Image 1 (cartoon, rainbow, N blue to C red):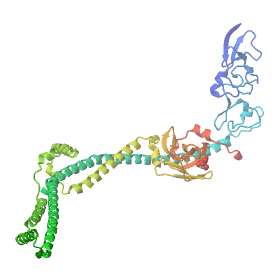
Image 2 (image 1 turned 135 degrees about the horizontal axis):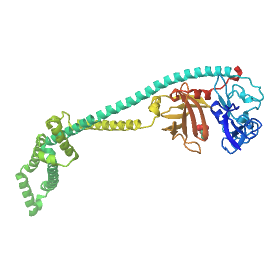
Image 3 (image 1 turned 180 degrees about the horizontal axis):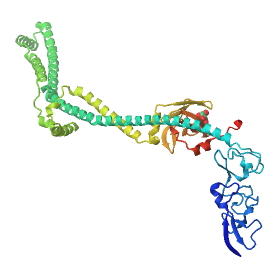
Image 4 (image 1 turned 180 degrees about the vertical axis):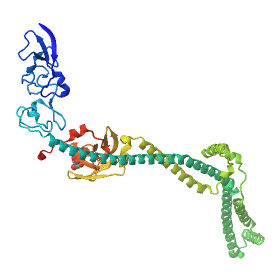
Length: 489
Ligand code: MAN
């Protein structure tokens, strides 16, 4: 029958770290009989219904379901704790049980050789290994601190680039209303100029249709008169010939009488004034036309001009209201010394300028909203191209623009996502997809393409190193990355 727990001993179980030794504290029970080993017991860690005698720990027989009774042997297929190496003078290590006493010195984990505690063939190398580690550490820390300094300047450059963009945006946003105002002013000046030019049109400009009609009619009359005149002349010639060549001996009274009347007609024929007259009229009309051309037309009322519903008039109206209200300028002040012909190209130029400014504003805003990595850092690489010969190709990598393999476009910058840069829309592969790439960024001294692979045909994977992607390093990181130089041991 169990009576009472009398005392608790401090454990020193091989393979268990000092923090976990308490889990292996033997329990000494004083009861009837006790056990031969002096009454020290222990319970499996994951099943306290299994009670073992203390000497069954590390006896090379697996008794507990979780293997907790064999932390220092390879008897259990799995144990909750790995074997603890003290590694005095260096850092403690934890090694898998299957590596214990296998004849191999695993100095990378157990520099004190304790993983081979049964065979005892591994001398303690912790001093030498720690010295190597210290050298590695100081070199690494130096490198990282240099890299972090560089990173600081890269970040500053990225910030400067962002600030420059913001400044350009502000300048453009400031210039836009001013340019638009100038444009509207020119448009109003054009309105005025056009009205003025319209008002100074000549009488001829307004009556040119009528003048043309009159001119055409007179030309027609002149032609008709010439035709009639030709006919008369032909008849006169026939009669003249008759009067000269008739035979007076025939005594034909009708012939004699006709010739007599013709001679009377010829002697009484008056000079033809009508023809001169009509030429006179023609001359007169030409003079009227010339006068009309030089006479200013004043028949078009200003009111009518204002009420013509044109876009220009509406604009003029709005601008006049605006200027009267805010600019306190009188409309006369918008009278330009330029003619409408000179104003039109000026307006076109300003319209183009407004369009360009608006486009630039759109592009800058779009760019400012893009994800260029933490602290916008990728901006610092906008003008940087890394050139690298790898695998028989020359690669040209611009992190914010494009990647080329010789002259073949691998891809254009698409986005920065989850710490990687994606490029797409590259040149199409023969019988395949368009080329694309993903760039992984790692810490390293100097900006460089470390490797290129093509995990799938025409989809490339790049690793680029640089100080930008370095972080302060911890002792834990250093221990993980440290590798022993066995030649020096
Ligand atoms: C070129 C290169 C390769 C690619 C093939 C596909 O040789 O771009 O990377 O795999 O074309 O045909």
